[in-house]
Image 1: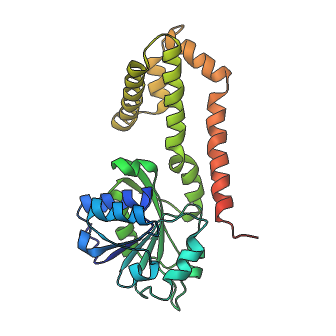
Image 2 (image 1 turned 60 degrees about the vertical axis):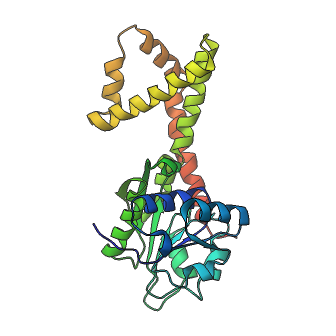
Image 3 (image 1 turned 90 degrees about the horizontal axis):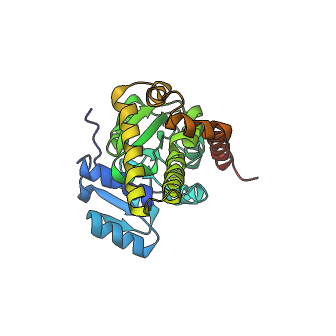
Length: 276
């Protein structure tokens, strides 16, 4: 796949916008000279410019004026204002790739109108994009083409793994993989605290827990076996793992994670609703 980006505008130089841009630059999908980042926070803009060698501006309109691809990476609470600023300057042929949580492509199409319809692709990455290990779901809006999807997939693949999804599924994606790293971090905190309570130093416990999580993830990915199969393999009858799992099941940890995904999904839906 060789979907070219001639001029890129990144609207929002925060953690996710910077992570996506860093991946694109590292993968040489776009050159620093072809990038303009719109960031209103002066300190953050200076950091992005220094770290990545790209142009910055506080003006979203200025950033998008020459761009053929716009990466919209702002908070859902401000996206409408940002789109209003962009609209007069945005090229008719520009593709808008949005990582704004909960905001449907139809809402962005409405904010950035065209007679033939604004081409929008939504993406839902996660915070692991900061280390090139995100999983990102990509979904086309009503007017996006196959070529637009290929551009979005190239952006997403620069920071990890990419999958296609229907836009109706993106709130669920948000609840699983968008919010998922935080669930895993909570598990890591709890396991570390448990090890310390049993007598390990925090430094040693931290190494053990982090590598255990990394190893478990590697087994899931590299063996292709189901989580249930891998769990059964390590669980001997009446053994130590069975004792620990018994506590987790009695405390309804499995159900708690299911409910967490549900709650995060519902919150994503709420964020996407227009204000009353």
